[in-house]
Amino acid sequence: VLAIWHQLTKTEIPELAKCSVLMRERSRVEETIHAMQRAGVGNLQVISDFDMTLTRFAHNGKRVPTTHNILDNRLLINEDCTKKIRALLNTYYPIEIDPSRSAEEKLPLMVEWWTKVHELLIEQRIRKDMLAQAVKESSAMLRDGYKVFFDHLAEQQIPLLIFSAGVGDVLEEVIQQNHVFHPNVHIISNYMDFDQTGVLRAFKGQLIHTFNKREGALSHAAGLTELQGRPNVLLLGDSLGDLTMADGVSEHENILTIGFLNDQVEERKESYINSFDIVLVKDETMDVPNAVLRHIT
Ligand code: TMP
Ligand code: MG
Image (cartoon, rainbow, N blue to C red; front, side):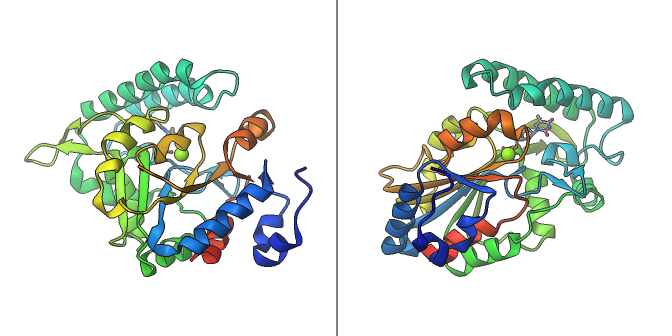
């Protein structure tokens, strides 16, 4: 089934015919794209995860840092803290992506991971005025084609909701330094709470981790007026937990989900194909989302 593609898709969106693009039901994808195109840009919103979705997974064989990992810089944290945060990553990341465990099983463990890391960061008394420099010194990198993606959405006044379990302050700095923090961008993430002297003392609000985005969607995204009255959603993510990011969209009509399968490809392929409409295997670019957007808008 996966090998079958229609002439229509080949000519209209040639990017969908690449062998790194997997689809459970190509005809459903085509129908959804056509329905979104007919409804027009005024009915569309884009909801995207950040780490490993808008940012690259790897570059030249080296992992690209997530917003949490960007904080691993001597300007912000000491060596002992680095070691502890890396040990936690080595323990919990394999659990996060383990296809043999259910989301319910992972949930308490993710809370444990995030809570421990945030406590360690708070102990380090991170200074707000050092964040920009840490991002500059990091190897943070958005996916190839990111500029076309962000600029196109801004030009068409299509709201882009970035929904991240990473660190919001770092995320903002990354998109700012890449000159794509446009007025149509809205962010739901874990934000740092600094005291009057600019020292980290807590994280604000309800913790967001990879498997509780549904709650964040219902409590935050549902309240964003800019997103209201836009029943068509293009959703981008790299984790199965990202699929719940659109749960706050009331009376949605068409949802097209695109999943980046970056890691543990063979082990997770089946579950990704069953869960996302379009699966992109080891694709470090925004080519497919950009092609779909170009077609819809
Ligand atoms: P996302 O929702 O923007 O993808 O951000 C969550 C990712 O951050 C998730 O895949 C795990 C990753 N992460 C780290 O890399 N280091 C950490 O210390 C924590 C808590 C999460
Ligand atoms: Mg992610």
